[in-house]
Length: 507
Image (cartoon, one colour):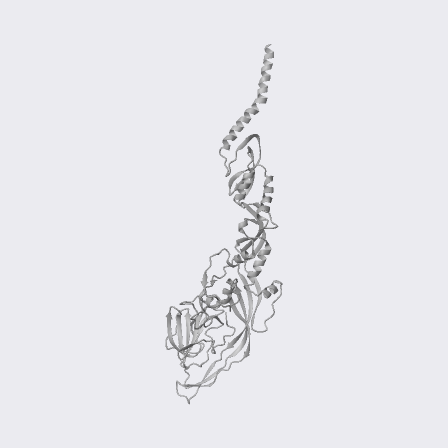
């Protein structure tokens, strides 16, 4: 009997080990995980429905590094993203697809917990916060230091079309088409200019990318605006006044050329000669593009060859008197320049070649001594080399002079337009450092905005072509030039009115 009882006791003990121990372990495991559950929290409330005895894979949805919740069925996410694209983005972004936002992701891990199903709430959270990206085209701008800017466009064609429009602001459409096809533009046979090359200093690459819909530029105008100004959206505007011209607006605002004013207001101005309406608002902030468009050009100009004055002693003339026996006549030449324009602004230029077309005739003056006379010849030369007129007589109300730049050396020399005597060497708040030369024949010439005061003292006798100072922008000037006009018997005259040949010298 005792043996039978012993056997029964051993059987019961074995059964307790086989059936009771797993239950006990499960309770211990559940208790341990229950403690962990209290420390786990997401953006959305989500309860644990069951604790398993063995771990299984769960999928956690994160946004900006913060847990949103646990997906019950990850496969539903794919269908949800397809439905979201078709509902919200298909019309604006055809032939595309939808993915989670840039900082939204799903992470898989092993867990003992089973969570309640809140997939619909998770999807609603994504929708309410627009945590999606759409397939687009990424455009990267890089230089030797690497990628410095990136934009997203609806498709590559929109970017290409916008780039073509941007390039046409700096080069003729036909020239662009010719150069883009690998051909050369026609050689110059007469005066004018032609583009011989166009390039972008930076490297631009395109690739497939996913971006937030709000980041994607969907129109050509949006892309063009970026190519013009990058992320700089602040612009300055000018209100047109009575008598303003396109060139005059530019002259009064940062020294812009008429072409520049036209380009940055292409929605309002189609010609540099367009009549402006008083009160009209014009943008006067020039392009601040993330890229540099370089156009290499050849320009042929007709240039004057200044005649020289030859002085011959004549004993029949008393000392200090003179007599002109031969009138000087300027010659001319065809000059070919190579120029480099960056974003529509002339940066460098140099003389490539020239052909004389008319030899000058030297003036001959007989003098009683070898001292150069202080009396002018009555004919005038340009006050600068490579002259370009940035603002003509009357280009804005009250402008009674011409503003002249040296197109290749913005701070170059200013020359005496004829023989004479320095009559005034002074400064005022409007024209800055200025000089007046009295040519002792009824004529006087005026030179304003010199970079520094002229080194020539009042009373100094100068010869036509002598350096009297340097170009500058002192006084009320927005760019380096000289404010130049001619007076005869005290009356002011436009230098382009019979004194200088201003044809082809507009900026």
